[in-house]
Image (cartoon, rainbow, N blue to C red; front, side):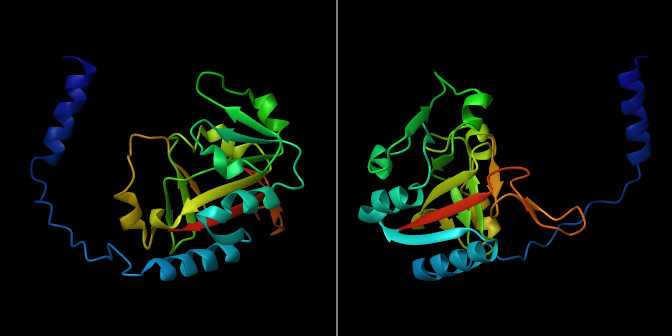
Length: 206
């Protein structure tokens, strides 16, 4: 008898008189019922509470706002697939692509990153990236000190179950709730431990 067979036999023996699993009630909220203005207001409130910067603009104003946010940065990286017009007014653009990925050392020498997102959760103030075009690999959004994230209003979900239904669980998901920070040591807040020290979210109205 193999070890695998023995283990499975023991599991079957232990579970032979197990009670039937009852159906689990799932009465939690599946949507918030908020309209676009309500979603933007709630997401903005949560992000500001996390000490992130928030701008709400129409699509035509995105290039100018992104250029303002990047004004103090010498260089910034964008993932392949991000709409070029969104960063057209900001000099210092570097592209990271699957064909020519930047090294960790190169990313560490870049001041900022600009990405899109797969979804956002208004209730928790969470931005979700899934590695799709325009969002890039996880290293791009974690290594530079300043992250500018572009969020279309149509990608904002009110509550978590609503957002999860929009995601592909086979993709590498990065969940961001404010700038990277910890208070583990003597309750002193330290920023930039696990990712960017600064997070600016640009919400684009439809």
